[in-house]
Amino acid sequence: MSDESPETTTPLLHRQIDGWRHRITNSLRLKTSLLSELSGAVGDLGTYIPIVLALTLVSNLDLSTTLIFTALYNIGTGVLFGTPMPVQPMKSIAAVAVSETPHLTVSQIAAAGISTAAVLLFLGVTGLMSVLYRFLPLPVVRGVQLSQGLAFAFSAIKYIRYNQDFTTTTATKTTDPRPWLGLDGLILALTCLLFLILTTGDGNSNEIRINSNAPITRRTRIQKRLKILSAIPSALILFLLGLILCFVNDPSIFNDIKFGPSKFHVLKITWDDFKVGFLRGAVPQIPLSVLNSVIAVCKLSGDLFPGTELSATKVSVSVGLMNLVGCWFGAMPVCHGAGGLAGQYRFGGRSGLSVVFLGVGKLVLGLLFGNSFVRILRGFPVGILGVLLLFAGVELAMASRDMNSKEDSFVMLVCAAVSLTGSSAALGFVCGIVLYLALKLREMDFCFWKSASGSADEHESLL
Image (cartoon, rainbow, N blue to C red; front, side, top):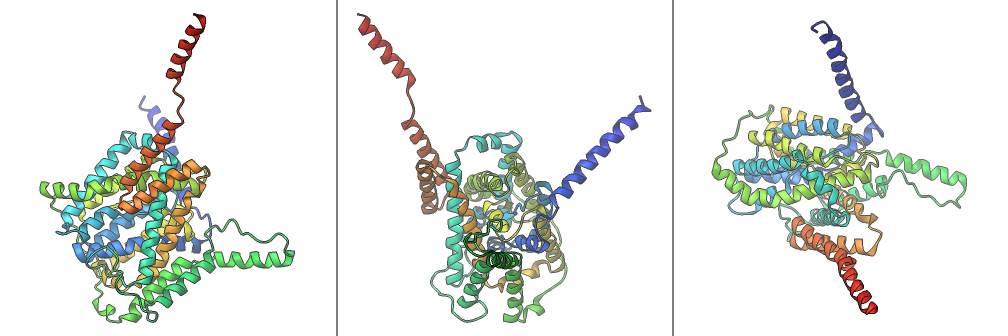
């Protein structure tokens, strides 16, 4: 038996190694150009940077630890899922942490993230998340996606039109209009907006519509020009432009930069921290994570990458494991988001290589600059962030365009309207479910009553 063991186990081990090698190679294979994947890597920074900046300045979040852990998450999810799966802040926890008084401490923020992660891990391991994903009506999911996309777009317009202050609250300031001129002026933002429109169009590079009646030479010339424009890494160019403008606007940044990461340490989280973090942070975050971070992400992935729809169980377990590890070290609570996926796809991300590039970039910044990188983020032009966020939000909202029947559109729009008005995806989701069931109840054929009345009529006719 001992002689046969190596012969039987070695091929099995080789098969497992070959399987992992094939998965990694397939996940990191270029599906477009290298520049497109690099451009898609920064497609979700319109939401990432403002929230990270606010948590760092208001709640004393350790930026270096957050950059390092989110970098590892990006690399891991890129290999695991093979799509530009984003890693974004948990928005409800972040909003409560910096906008409500008293502000949540770092330990309470971590406790909220751990609590949310435990719920999602439980739903994923037990298979309940797959049950929810399988039976939830598509119009309700589309309503949540539409509301999130429009919410991003509304915030983006405010970023472009008005000056923002992320140091005191996540709520946008709408009292101070952005000046036309300057390194973060309205002209710069509108120029970036026009640049993205010219280079990316409507975001669908596979469908270049040209008048079929035009001469062949003209059609060929237009196709060639559009192909060149779509190959430009537009989002990457804007991000690099924003970094350059940071230093041009305030050269003293060079003096404030200190090299090296901060030291890792395990947070001391008390039961009181868990109590406050769960009630104030996790309770509003859990419904949003279930809907937008798991279910909506899986639906959107199937729309953007036909034939590669993600497993709700995998995505749920992924969110749970990320936070059950990183939050204990003070990293920001994170999740996967449909808006981030839409943004990275919008700007060219088509494979896991896109988020792996983003992860490598975060890792370098976290190890090289540490917490001093917040000095650079503070000077990043908010108008450019608004432009990136606007395109990501519109791309997410456009996922709802497949609602062909009036009934489905009705459910979707009511769900989106309630979500936007009440600022709660969970409230919109509940209203959408109730409306969907009410419409189905209205069309239901009550067979029992019909059969009972039919037998009574038959009995009366016999008499």
